[in-house]
Amino acid sequence: MTPRPEDLEEFTPYLMNRIMARYNKGVESALKEAGVSVAQMRALAVLAESGPCTINELSVLTVIKQSTLSRTLDTMENAGLIRRTAQDGDSRFREISLTDEGRAAYDGAWPAMLGMRDTMLNALSADERHTFNKMLLRIFYDIRHHDF
Image (cartoon, rainbow, N blue to C red):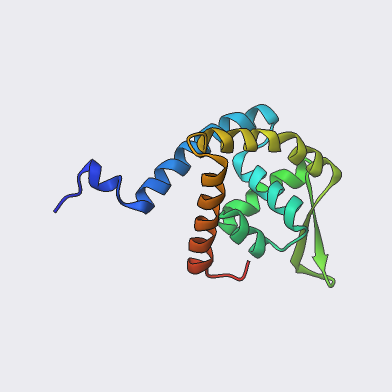
């Protein structure tokens, strides 16, 4: 049986994907004005909030494939937003961290992220937002494959 549009609206993964696609489109426009891409902002946000990490960790936390993230990090390093340093003298394992310029870019772009979040959740009260986030975290912790 072929699903009807109203059936899809009851299929949570489909609905979540549609919501995030619209959110990401809005964020893309807002971040363009701030001078960073969505992928760059994801990396900046994770590094600003979590501190230095490896590309493997960053790939998981940003939800960006490692090959795509590597190219994004090349661009960010060339722009002076991040620094990659060898771990324990082994150039195969590099720690990625924010520079002062990266922190400034994050601080400058974060209001756009907050604005898009508020637009996305406008229909919910503060209590509903809190409950919704708690529910999402429960789902996330239940299905994740990593400890972070």
